[in-house]
Length: 107
Image 1 (cartoon, rainbow, N blue to C red):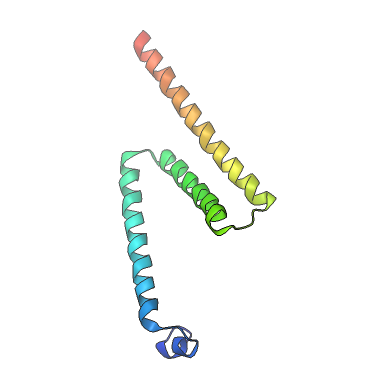
Image 2 (cartoon, rainbow, N blue to C red):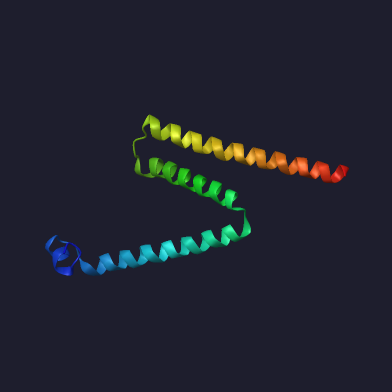
């Protein structure tokens, strides 16, 4: 009952703008999913997961900067751990790639 037009009007919420926002959010999410599937078809699932983690960190940092959200110690540590994990993954992946290149050059 809370999402009926009558209930929304009783709370001062206009039906038209609400529907527009829901449709826009759905369109943006659909676009995001299409981009995500496109990227997944071009990179490994692990790389995609790492990029998704980095995206979440970027959203948290943007939220702190734009909306001035307070940051608890746990949030800061979690963000630092996520960034550290992305950095370590990138370094190890690069190192493995260099090792493979050296083996191919020697063999």
